[in-house]
Image (cartoon, rainbow, N blue to C red; front, side, top):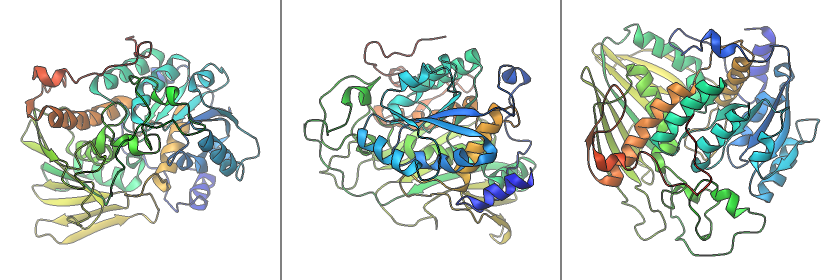
Length: 448
């Protein structure tokens, strides 16, 4: 890595070390670079979704050495567009156009790439439209709303040969890359179990009440691919996560995506053989939260390997000594990994090595960004230019995302099920009814 790049990373809000691409990182084929623009060309980008997450991309976008021009800020809520325009104007010289409909941006042939940070139900349809329109995509988690969308994302990426980075930014952590490479090389012996966890203190959620959409909100476009319904108060501003399955994917899609991806990466597994969950809504039982707020999920893989999820959205008891993270167990020791680095322990539980980052990536706080988000965005730009392999290509991300969909499906049918470990398909017929979802007519993702 160049000195300039190192200086940039130090100067942006993060204080991280340089990018490190270990041998375990999934590499793109030579063919995938065949239509990619030259390394010295400026990239023209747009951001769709201007809520709590978009600002995480800005440090990498504004850094002169990355040679990026931000052309559009897109959101279905006018106040979000105006607020983002004001904030971005403080750090860039040009004035991005404000747009509420991503389809108009996709039609603009000068746009090379789009960052998508919308509600979950928009992710896969928007990304597929963007790829079809010739755009590279930085796609926030969850990359899909259901398993079928994950399959379609991978199919579209292969057909249109675009760079699609999933927004599980811990894949770009030098510390995570380092220790997982060491785990694969046997530093803790034969790995057999991973515990991924998330603990938060979410409070009451308003009960839904029919209301007129707030001023400036394009409610029809917010719904997009989802079936149409009347607006209910406070839906658009984050609480869509908890108001049924039309828009959100519950805490599994919202947060478990990150830690389950690390667990699967460390154990070097793909599809499980069996999925079992215990879950329910146990807190503020009379409020508007319609999802589970507590879930324990177990994914059993071939070779007697197991991943367990422990998610507690509204009980802040600090069971593991951190708000989120992943513990990997092996025959000769264990490792704790989170966004701040890793700690390596021997069989007696003694700390024998640690590598902690001095960066500041958001943990359980809403939205946020930091060193890993910036590294992940730089990696996206470098991959488009053919200078690096993606750290989280969509074909890998979609497999990790599938674990969250399995758990949500098991919760919704209140039953465990077996999985075909070769194809990822579920043997249970009732479960397979939730493999896809109902779309608003005209918004279906067409097969390619």
